Image (cartoon, rainbow, N blue to C red):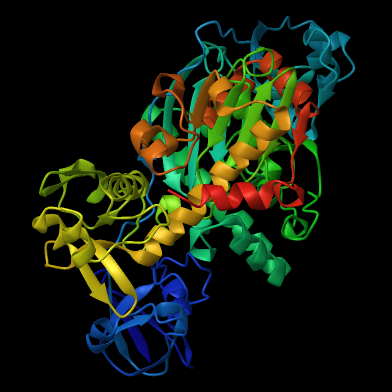
Length: 602
């Protein structure tokens, strides 16, 4: 029996009944599994062009019209005969250039990795007992040298006295023939739940060479950390799979970078990794199941250190790999790294640091304290649980304005619209709230009520009704399908924004300050960089303060990882501040329920 996938024109043979999703995996065809196969998100929708299948739609995410057209959920469908399947428009997880990393102006670098070029005296070979003794004596205090480095050194020294020794602090990690002192590189890696970023740095010059962002390949096994944790808990093989997928994504990005820049992977001598606590555990090959069970205690604290060869990372096998210290069960090393890019550890100002994303980590500094919490915002901001939500890709609506009778949209790369990415989702909710189309309680009003309120008819006509409730039409695809935001979508954003705003307010309560006393709100995360200040305030994601106090940090985690890579001082600062953080467990707070109910209102 054969299953064929269009438009990829890929087919795979099978001998017995199997799930359509398993067939896609066998064919290496990417289909979104944001809900980890639970049948709730609807992102794995595909069309059966020919053949019969066994299918169900347990949560009613496919409309009657779509069912009549042959659409099914891949995760809830079994195939038992030849079938031809058409995939919806693909936004394949490909590596793409990210914005250059800009370090603080007063930053100074000293990575601890350096090289020394030597032309050894021939007589030295007769006066020393071993190659190891020769290297150690020339290394000026280096204490450690591994067997593989010794083997390589022996091969070189038998034929040449012209060598370069590479050091990482007190360890000799490589020996090369000739003078290679100008070629010292390192990687700073920010591994997020949705997106990873690999930054390639010249460690000698202290400058960025290039960087690449890529969609985390683990996304097919759940859009959020809880889905990933649940998947790893099912079997040891699943943990190995997610670890392998993360490393594959990193290596694909590394290979793209070194190929474009004419660099050898063996010239990468240091790697720094940051991510949320779940990603950090998975990268280290540690089961994160304890993070899903109260009191959410991580398996380890402090940083972890290994070697690139042991972790199967495409770099010099002796490159030291450091996974930066996490703060708590759901406040990871990405936040540790992000905070050191600011003056929060030393400033007396009251500053709020918010990483707007699936986990919604927040830090509040002031009065000599560093308070932190995580919020279960979920994947709504990144589009995973939104009907027309999608990753940031060509054709995604990223900017929306309601002006008079018109809905003005802007898509990525100015391509025809195919969905809505995170910034566009926040924009449309903000605009619907601002114009009164969505009321303070989050209800998407119907046509009659909007007309009674004096809404232009052209706008009111965009409200449509379905068996699942009202929805607002934003645009149409090239083939005439309505791109819309539904009542359920609004509720998803409402819950997500309430989670983050509640976290902010509880931390303010704990410190004994009001939002008016905030000196700044620092919005972190590559996604956060694209959210307009007005939209973030109008949608009720962040406290309503003077917009001049709102600052964008960009990918603070990536910047912080780069600082740790380049500077032993930044690395020490990172380890020093971890123990200063006071983790606030929101659900255990007396004021949590009250603050959450208030934050649910727009």
